[in-house]
Length: 285
Image 1: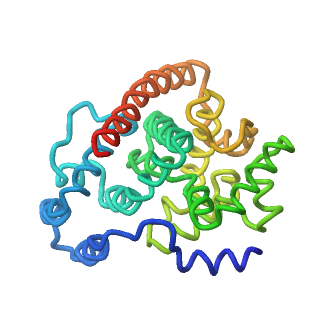
Image 2 (image 1 turned 120 degrees about the horizontal axis):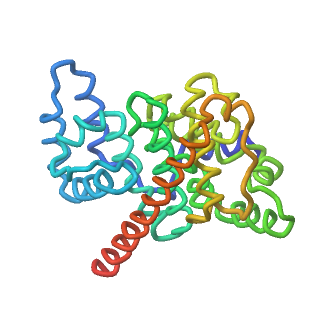
């Protein structure tokens, strides 16, 4: 299977959960200048399961709000529509991850946490969007595993046997890497470019046509979480930090120490978050 065949396959993704019908309704509503967070919240809250998932993610450690968010309308005000829409779109995907690849799920949560902390330290507007980009940066791996399971297992096996990065093996075997695959699917879902580009270019942020700083933050956060050993990104290697990306976001020693301390504290909280998810799954079954 080559790159074009994979692109065609992605146009009709079958193995992943379908998008909730509410997404198309929300897309229509958000184009209305008169729509309010309260109106949007009421629509979402009609779906109790979706509301429960959404509030659980919004109140998790990787967003780090000091107060508990109890309504969807408050979540929309605090996080913005782009983040809420993305969480809705990807909530079903993360169910797949939780059940099939908990290591990748934890890695994604860790990357989201680190990205949010770095974005706040840099004074980035809407740091929650950066957290969300971190949360879905490895979307392409989920798609590969779901849609092309045999090819995915072969990539993982080859990377392990030859001690290589997964993305190198992907491009060699498939002609396309998981970053580009994730970008393709994110565009199909009409996610904003502020989220699409960091997904697509998180291994090569300077190649991103726009939002290079956000892409650099996700690149750094991905590497940091791998280095800290939180979760499992698919191979055992810690990629090298891109020099140009680091120049966009580099910190002094004092700031870096504070970032590492905060990330370490939040990762401990995330362990509790993932344990709660497992408990909930056990209760439902």
